[in-house]
Structure formats: structure tokens, C-alpha cells
Length: 383
Image (cartoon, rainbow, N blue to C red):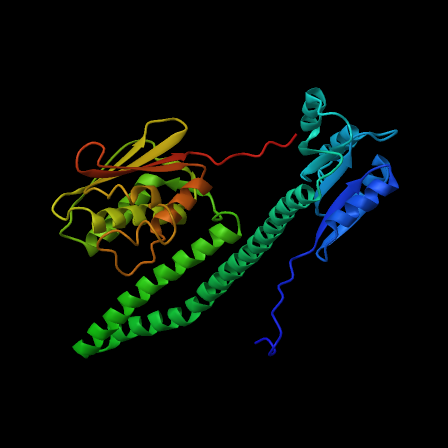
């Protein structure tokens, strides 16, 4: 709270302004017009001196350049400034005592000028034009700081998520082991039922923790790591179908396959893809219609996997299906998940240099996911 009788004064961030003119009196006059507590005025009497100042000072907000100077005129200095990475974005206003010559203006704008001022200068016009660029520069600085803070916050959050997910797995493993022992060894039916519920809930929590860890790996490590090896995709999908069919015996799954389905893939990760897509189709599709799987290995360099179920995804959700925490979480009937399943599917497929696409409602009341996987990983050619 401010002290009684005193006003709170907001101090603007300081900005730097460069003045270049070969006449000392002109520099003094310009500096006097632009003098403010929050502006540092840099003065140079030649193009060479101006370049030295620009090497010493970063983040200059605006430059006033006199057009007519010996050795290096204002146009030449502007071209040199535009040619250097650290100075190419500095706004330049040319100051000239010459006549309002259109050809000279075109040359100045071509050299990178944002405006021309003609002597004698109007103080109010000069100050107002300068203030516009000072405010723009302050806004740019503020946005850069906010972006840096947000980036750092996001990285810390993702690191925290990764550490938290990793540390949760150890106690969860102990809980699952204890629940499994209770279910298998207890003779009390009520205890076995409770242990079974604990086991199911623990496994569901384990899947969510793995999803969180995969999210952290994708964001922090630049992608989900793979352990490739010879993999029979047909046998892998068949195993996932059996697992889901045991959990949902009343919801039929139809599977067909053609050709060679062997490739150089990460079998555990592709099992995750197949399980997520099959589970997604069972959960969100019409329970009275079969989920249809199609595996095509007839191509020499790639294998395709198609999964179709009856049911249409609302058009408003379709662009966000592969977004983390969005696509799956907003669809009907979602329970026990984080909305990461389809995002992780996409990340795994992209790590294999493949593609995953979805169509819904295009040809009848169906949702179709299509996965294409190159048989071999990308090889690095050493020269």
C-alpha cells in the first residue's frame, strides 16, 4: 500500500534509441527532444561509430539516421544494419534536410526505413513517432519474457510429471502383488472379491501412470523411444484381440489379415497401439455391432492396420482427437482414463515413421482408424 499523500509511480522498462548525425548540434537537438528517464540515447557522428555502438549495445528499440553524411551515408548504414542478424530488426527513421524526393524515399524504404522525417523537425511529431516504436519494443520484450517463463514452467511441470509417474510405480507394484496374493490364497469369498477389485483398480491406475510417463517421454525426450526387433504384427494384434474379447465377451470383434505381417518394430509399443485402438472402438462403438480389424501385409515396404466400428465422432471433436487430454476425454462414456490414449498412439506411430488417420461419418455411420507402418526403420547413411 502506498504511503499517505504519495502516488504510486509506474516505471516503464528502459529502452535504447540510436541517433546518427555528423553534426554535433543536430545530435544535441535530437537528444534533447527525445530525453526521458526511461530512454537511453546513444549518439554517433558517423556510420562507423554507429556500427561500433550497435556492437556494444543489444536490443536497440529505434534508430534515427541522417541521410547526408560523409564517407558512409544513412542509406549505406541502413543496408549494413539490415545485413547483420543482431541489428536487422531495428526500426529505422531517416532524417533529412533535403527536398521531399520520391526517388530518395523509395531508396530509403528499400534500404529498410520505416519512415522519413524532414528538417526542420516538428517536436511533437518526432516524440509521438518515437513513442510508438518504444511501446512496441516494450511489448516485444514483455512477450519474450512471458514466453520464456511459460516455457520454463511447462518444462518444470513435465519434469515433475515424469518424476511423479516414475515414483508412483513402486508402491503401486507392491499393492498389486499384495492384492494378487490375497485373491489367490484367501479362502474368504468376500476377501477374494475385494482383492479382485483392488487388482483391477491397480491395473487401471498402472495404465494411467504409463500414459503419463509416455506423455513426459514424448515432450521431454523429443519422442517415445523404441526397441526394435523382428515383430509379427498379426500375432501381436491377435493376442490383443483375445485379451479384449475376454474382458468384453458380448461385444464381437472380427479380424482378417493378408500377406506378410512381419517387420522391424517395437513389439511392446505396437501392442500398446493395438490395445488402445481396439479398446477405443469397443468403448465408443455400438455394442451390438462388431468391431472390424483388417491387417494388410501385401505391400513390400509397409503394413497397414484398419479398425472400424459403428458410431460417429461429433465433427467438433474430430480435429482434437489426437490432442493430449482432449480427444478421448470429451467423448461419451469415457471413464478411468486421462484422454492420452490416442495421443500416445500417434506418438508411437510417428516414432516408427508411420501415419495414423481417422475418418468418421464419411461413408455411413462408421469411425475408421487407419495405421500405416514402414516395415523397416529409417537407416542413417554414413558418408
